[in-house]
Structures are given as C-alpha cells and as structure tokens.
Length: 148
Image (tube, rainbow, N blue to C red; front, side):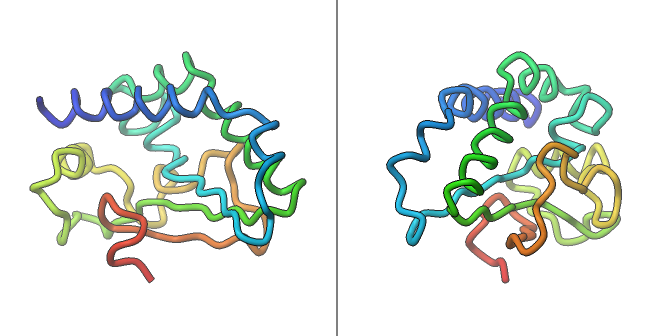
C-alpha cells in the first residue's frame, strides 16, 4: 500500500469514527478530567485546495461531514467546559528532518505540504482554536512523542 492509499484508508477510518460523534457525547464527560483533541484539521489535509485535497482526503472529509461534526463536538466541549486541545503538523520548508519511513510523511514531502507558516499548515477556518486553547505542533505522526 503506497502513502496515498494509506492516507485514504486512514482518513476514511477517522472520518467514519468522527461522523458518530454527536453533541450528546459530551453529556457523560467530566469537564475536570476530559480533554477533546482536535487533530490535523489543517487546510492542506481537509480543504479541497490543500495539498492532500487532490488525493481524495477532502472528498472523504466532505462526504462524511467531518468538519461539520468535529466543529459541533468542539462547540459542545467548549459549552460544557471541557478543554479543547488542537494538534497540527508543521514542518520546516524542505522537510529536512521528516521521517521518510512513515508512508504518510513521504507524501507530505513529495507534495511539499504542511510547511510551517503557510496557509496549508494553518487550521481550517471552522476548526480554528479559540483564544487560550492549547495548540500542540507535531513533526511526526504522534501528537505525544517528541512534542513540547
């Protein structure tokens, strides 16, 4: 499976899981211990004009109403007082330290995607962090390993 096929497969799984998320999901959460992670809602990934938009990602996102559903989940979390943490990928121009053994990141380099400070690396307008919400910038697949 090449990086593009893997990306579509992963995107489909994430989108399918996301569509099940509804506002009532937040009702059972303890706002003192729960956190909602909003991961990789960046223009290059979810927008049709983004670098991965031409790789079917944006189509999956649109078909499965991922942005609409995720933004509803974020709004519900905010309403309940649940912390929202935003995770994004942002890499230096030229991707000098990218992990080429990860197929998705080989595609990132090939497409010149997710370059720090560009429109593509910015959050989708419907998923912009609110003032004071934590933003984690990752340079690998994990939002936890190797991040500040």
